[in-house]
Image (tube, rainbow, N blue to C red; front, side, top):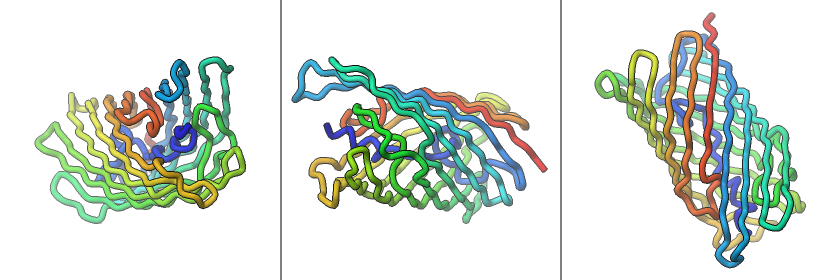
Length: 279
């Protein structure tokens, strides 16, 4: 079943600005720290045409400690430390589960081109393989992968007083890892493009929508390319964000429009609460 290996190919690992994307300008003021907890529940159910009558179900509960620090008006450092609880079942068999620390993500982002009501930023992303890539459930997920190194381009601009539009682009190299069968997995580079629109409903509340597209080539097992494992995914995200001087709340739903073979989930609900500390 292809999905066993392809789920890691669509894991993005972004920091939540505005919901799952990055702003083209700084989120925080200079020497300001944001710390919080992010939680999500992902669900997927699918069938394989060649195996009628068999249904696969997978769930993913993730709790992450997140943080962000602004070193100056143009530069921010962010991190995410996730703990995952995976569960899956197949018609006629029992449940399968795994849990533990997943891969830690780091981001360094700097605004290189400020302009009126917006800016353009460049960033460097790093996924540290702290998760156990051998902790695997049969329905297609594990707790970790290989080292990931990527570059990020983010731009955003405000139009009028109430609407902001943003674009994210990313290219990420993903290193080798050993899976639960002691096979060496080499994923292909990941291409990503995302768009977001934010509508201010008041002084502190914003309605946000995002569209995200990913593309990846065939992956390799033991150095042998697996034909037919390249693909793409398309997701739409909808949610709300509440901002105050001391804390931030976000909640939303992420819907996958992609082929069940490649998508990470059919839907995911998520929420974040974070607190802001100023020097």
